[in-house]
Image (cartoon, rainbow, N blue to C red; front, side, top):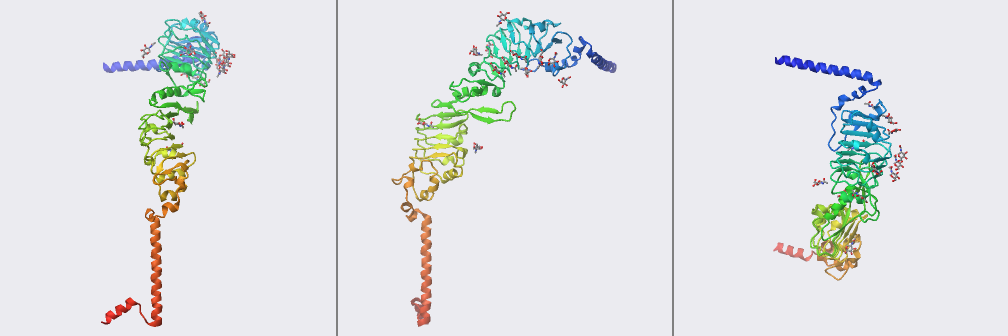
Length: 488
Ligand SMILES: *[C@@H]1O[C@H](CO)[C@@H](O)[C@H](O)[C@H]1NC(C)=O
Ligand SMILES: *[C@@H]1O[C@H](CO)[C@@H](O)[C@H](O)[C@H]1NC(C)=O
Ligand SMILES: *[C@@H]1O[C@H](CO)[C@@H](O)[C@H](O)[C@H]1NC(C)=O
Ligand SMILES: *[C@@H]1O[C@H](CO)[C@@H](O)[C@H](O)[C@H]1NC(C)=O
Ligand SMILES: *[C@@H]1O[C@H](CO)[C@@H](O)[C@H](O)[C@H]1NC(C)=O
Ligand SMILES: *[C@@H]1O[C@H](CO)[C@@H](O)[C@H](O)[C@H]1NC(C)=O
Ligand SMILES: *[C@@H]1O[C@H](CO)[C@@H](O)[C@H](O)[C@H]1NC(C)=O
Ligand SMILES: *[C@@H]1O[C@H](CO)[C@@H](O)[C@H](O)[C@H]1NC(C)=O
Ligand SMILES: *[C@@H]1O[C@H](CO)[C@@H](O)[C@H](O)[C@H]1NC(C)=O
Ligand SMILES: *[C@@H]1O[C@H](CO)[C@@H](O)[C@H](O)[C@H]1NC(C)=O
Ligand SMILES: *[C@@H]1O[C@H](CO)[C@@H](O)[C@H](O)[C@H]1NC(C)=O
Ligand SMILES: *[C@@H]1O[C@H](CO)[C@@H](O)[C@H](O)[C@H]1NC(C)=O
C-alpha cells in the first residue's frame, strides 16, 4: 500500500517534469510569435524570486538585461509578469501603465524613462504597490507629492540625472522604509524620516541639509556618499566635498572633546584606499587645546585621531598617559610648556618618541635628559622639533662631552643648570671635567700615567745599579744589607 503510494507519487513527479519540458520546448518555438506565451518563458524562474530585505524589486531578478533581451509584443511598454510589472524605454509613465492587462500588481520597475519631469500627484495608479522602482532614465525633476494612503515601502530612483525633488514629495508615504536616490544630481533632499536612504553618487547635496536629518535617517554607504559643504562654514574649511561619514565623526568629535578643552578639526588628511569608486577617503584629525586650565593630569579622553595637544601652563607632572592611554596614540605634536614635568624617562622606546614632530617642554622641572632621547633625535632628525628651554638640568662633564647631541635641541641656548649659574652652552670643559672624582675616565688616565712614570723610574734605577756594579763592584744598599745578613 505504502509502496504503491510512492510509485504513484514518483510517476506524478516524472510526468510533471516531462510536461514541463514539453511546455518549455513549445514556448521556445513560440518565441517568434507574439502574445502571452513569450511571457511564460520567464515564468519558471519567477517562483524563486526573493526580494532581499532593504532592497526593492528589480527587473534583474526576473532576467538580466531584461529590456535588451525582451522582444516587444505590443505597443505597451509595460508587461505583467505575475504580480511584477516591468516597463522599458518609457516615454510617459501614466500612459504606459494604463495599457497593462492587470493593474493589480505590487512591484514595478520602470527602466529608461525619457520623460524630463514626473508629477507624483498624477501617479494614483501606483498607490497600492510595495516597490516603485524608476531607474536608468533621464528625469530631471520630481514634482508634486504622492497622494495620501500610498502604501509604497521601497522607492528606487537610482541613476536618473534628477536635480530636483520637491520638498513635500514623500510626506504621505507613511510605510516607506527604503529610499534609493543614488547616482543622481540632487542638491536638496525631500523631507524624510525613519527610513534608510542611499544618496551615493550625488555630489551636490547640501551638507547642512544632511546634518539636520542625521539622527532621523539611516544613510547607506556613508564613506562613499559625498555632500557639498559651504566654504567657510567653519567646519571643514579647506574642503568643499566631504562624506556623510565625516560629518558624523565631526559631530561625535564635539561630544568627545574634554570639558576643559577646546577641540578643533585639523586639516584634512587623505588616505588612499584600494577601491574603484573613490580612491580618496577623508580622515578626520583633531587639534586639542587644554592650556591654562589648572590641570594636574593629562585629560583622560581625547577625540579620535588627535594629532596635536596643547597643555601649556597647567600643573601636570607626568607624561605617562602619552604612553599608556590609547587616546594618545596619534599625537604628533605636544605643547607642554610651563608645567611641573620632572622627567621624560617614560618616553623611552615609545611610538611617540619615534614619530613626534613637535615636543615642547619649556619651563618645566626636568633635571635630566636620558641620553637615548638625544641619540634618537640624532637618528631621525628630519621634521622633529624639541624644545627644553628654561629647564634647569644637573650640569656635569657628560653634557659637555656630548654637547654635539644637545645642540640638536632647537632652543638648547636656553637650557640652564641647577648646580651653577650658567646655560649649558656656556659650560667649559676645564670647569667641570678636571675635578677628577667627578670624572672617572680622567682619574684612570692619571693613574695610568703615574704607573708608567713609576715603571720608567724603576727601570732607570735598575739600569743605573747595573752600571755601577759593573764599574765599581758596588752593590746597591739593599743588596749589601742582604749579603751581610747572609754572611752572619
Ligand atoms: C536601485 O536600482 C539600482 C539600479 O538598478 C540598483 O543598483 C540598486 O540596488 C537598487 N536599490 C535598491 C534599494 O533596491
Ligand atoms: C530599449 O532601448 C534600447 C536601446 O536603444 C534597445 O536596445 C532595446 O531593445 C529597447 N527595448 C525595448 C523593449 O524597446
Ligand atoms: C541578454 O542580453 C545580453 C546582451 O545585451 C546578453 O549578454 C545576455 O546573455 C542576454 N541574457 C539572456 C538571458 O538572454
Ligand atoms: C531609452 O529609451 C529610448 C527610447 O525611448 C532609446 O532611444 C534609448 O536608447 C534608451 N536608452 C537606454 C540606455 O536604453
Ligand atoms: C535628457 O533630458 C534633457 C533635458 O532634461 C535633454 O536635454 C537630454 O537630451 C536628454 N537626454 C537623453 C539621453 O534623452
Ligand atoms: C502636479 O499635479 C497636480 C495634480 O494634477 C497639480 O495640481 C500640480 O500643480 C502639479 N504640480 C506641478 C509642480 O506641476
Ligand atoms: C542631466 O541633466 C542635465 C540638465 O538638467 C543635462 O544637461 C545633462 O546632459 C543630463 N545628463 C545626462 C547624462 O543625461
Ligand atoms: C548636475 O547638474 C548641474 C546643473 O545643475 C550640471 O551642470 C551637471 O552637469 C550635472 N551633473 C551630472 C553628472 O549630470
Ligand atoms: C533641506 O533644506 C531645505 C532648505 O534648505 C529644506 O526645505 C528641507 O526641508 C531640508 N530637507 C531636510 C530633509 O532637512
Ligand atoms: C520613527 O521611529 C521612532 C522609533 O523608531 C518612533 O518613535 C517614531 O514615532 C517614528 N516616527 C515616525 C514619523 O514614524
Ligand atoms: C598653546 O597654548 C598657549 C597658551 O594658551 C598659546 O600661547 C600657544 O600659542 C598654544 N600653542 C599652539 C601651538 O597653539
Ligand atoms: C611612524 O609614522 C610612520 C608614518 O608617519 C608610520 O609608518 C610608522 O609606522 C610610525 N611608527 C610607529 C612606531 O607607529
